[in-house]
Image (cartoon, rainbow, N blue to C red; front, side, top):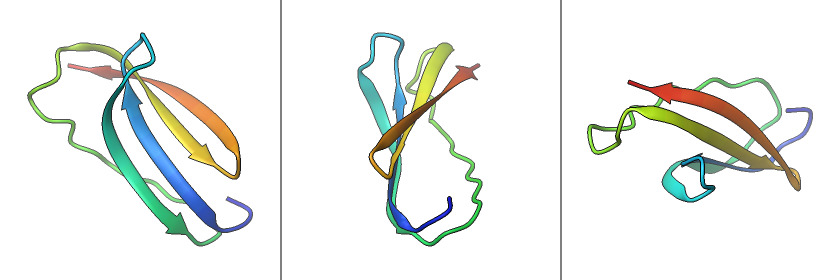
Length: 65
């Protein structure tokens, strides 16, 4: 992240519905990594993580086993 700002990360199913809010906070500039435990209530399968920051959205496919 080149400049600070508000960041949100959501776990979404493949239909686009938000399953879980993973993270939301104001962040300083820099690089960050986070690990999340999604819990046993999720079915195994493919999900998307949507990261929103600086007016943009980024997506990453994840596999829950």
